[in-house]
Structure formats: C-alpha cells, structure tokens
Length: 75
Image 1 (tube, rainbow, N blue to C red):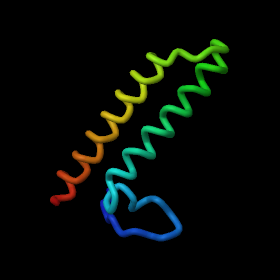
Image 2: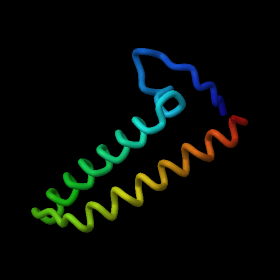
Image 3: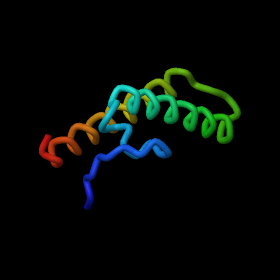
C-alpha cells in the first residue's frame, strides 16, 4: 500500500493530507446528498433526522479513517 501523500492539482487525492477539514466537509456533504437521493428513490420522502444521523456516523467513520491513515504513515 502506497501512502504517498503528494498533491496533484488535477485531483483531490492529496486533499485529506493537505486540508483535512475541507476533506471532512466534502465527505459530509457527499454523504448527505447521496443519502437524500437514496431516500427519495426508495420512499419518496425525506426523513431529516435519519439523514442527519447517517451523515454524522459516516463523517465520524471518515475522520477515524483519516486519523488512522496518518498514524500508519508515521506522522
């Protein structure tokens, strides 16, 4: 596994290493939008509490992933 955290301006691959707050915000927004789309497709309605709970849990898991990635990289 290559943990090279170099940034390339054409991609967001190095974003978590350079700007973790932005990466977490993007992950939270993407999780929310995707979950809203799934709710609309499955039920035809949106449950705000369920969506918020999913976004919080998903974002927490992503933050834990970033933390562990830095620990294994030796930073």
